[in-house]
Length: 426
Image 1 (cartoon, helix red, strand yellow):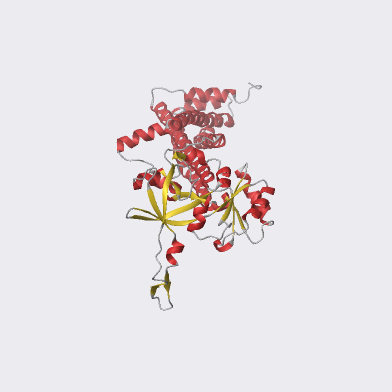
Image 2: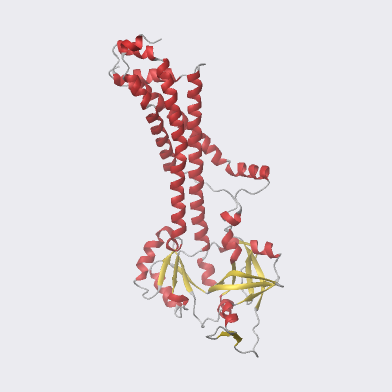
């Protein structure tokens, strides 16, 4: 025994843990089930939250530039090629972008919430994911061609070859004048503003609902004409790097070379959103760990009952020379083994649920006859999940620790029993 520390304690704790037909065995089984469910829920929620964060980052990287360069107040950049040369010296692939808000009109239907992006050869080369997003037709390559999303096409009943009108807010506001008294009048009544007519050449889908719902693409020259931009200028320079998670450092290094211009990485542009998601994940872990804590209290209740039922056995052990620490370890190990069994069973259950999450989600949606995660609110078409080994280890260790602590109180009572009184126990 001297060469095998805790061997006797482990043997007796496993013997006491063995399921029987009495009430203690049933309560022990319920405690293990409680730990199993708590660990499974924790793993599923943390994996889904991590999947949401990862998928959100992926969609942001697909629909936004890694680095954006623009002038204060939205002023046009009149020397985009010079800015691109500076970006290229920092290992950044770039493209001049002409973009802005437009009003889309189809027949008599008007939608004011659209963001237009002008595409040119440099943009198409830099945005390598564009071809993967195109579902039908082609990206605009001829004058007066436009690409709309599949979401917009379905909502407005549009198809390839249909004609739509684009209104420029700048041109619309240039037609009216507001004096100091608040009166509105036409600046030049004899002039009539006509919207620009475009033909749908392509239909795309990035599977990010907020972007797909409100974005259209046209040629770069058409965008410059629509927004009345100076010839050869751009509203911003978009840049892409090989490792987007190094974009922050690259942006900082470029700020000194581009004095007077804003240089912003994608993480800075979405700092608030990504921060909220990270806080939500931590809060989920903090709240759901209470499920395991409740199971730990159940273990405490089980072991207290076990101590009362085995009082004479404890007295006999102490009469035969067992130290208080030996008795203490027996019941602490019981809580530990309940935590280990429950944690590994919960891990297996959680990983199984994660693997079949979308099947379960589809089944639940059919039963309830409604989507559980509408894309217009959650932006994605399926439930993402990413199992992080560090999260699994953390959940398992916390669960085992709580269960071991749960067994500490009854273990202390057992260790402090007087063997003479324990042997007289009936």
